[in-house]
Length: 251
Image (cartoon, rainbow, N blue to C red; front, side, top):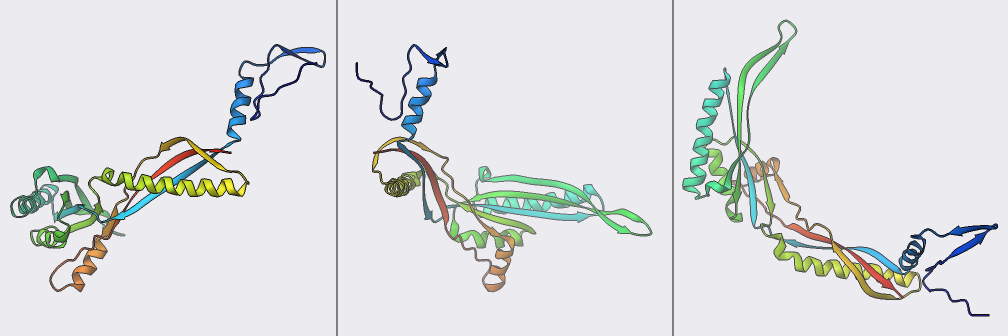
């Protein structure tokens, strides 16, 4: 009688027909493939490696706004237009900020309402609002710039967002950290199941991301109150990170 040979790793190769309960059964064409894949998957480790570094921000986005209130919508809008023009001229002329780095991010004119039991809801004037988002790269002068904008008429400085302009320049560092992180995880798993870690079979990268750090208006107000010379803004650090999905062979 010839020897019966079965392929390792749980793969089952079926040819011809099998007799089950007196009935001939033909294996589906994808049965062997599915068994092969299942067998391979029993001998791999899939992990997600995370790498991140903290870096000093090199770019800021400032939200500088102006509000004006008047009896009519047209009057509020006209008054606000004059104020925002003054602020814009300051940014371009005095602070030498390019027009490409100044963008309107919000604009509206809306009614203001009062309510009383006698008269119900009534319109009492209008408020015009215009916000500029300013891209700025001199981190040590942000507080001074905000003070100057306030003196020029900006009365709604909403927030400052810090980030890095070219996160891809840090990607090699975070990838190395992500691989090291994945190696540690996969090694621990292999050791726990009394196996050995083999070669890397595949790697795919998630989206690199750079979360921004927010300095809220409350923080800026407090900094201004605490400082005799003007607003002081702390840039802190931002995180550059990436994730790698890595599949290892398990021996």
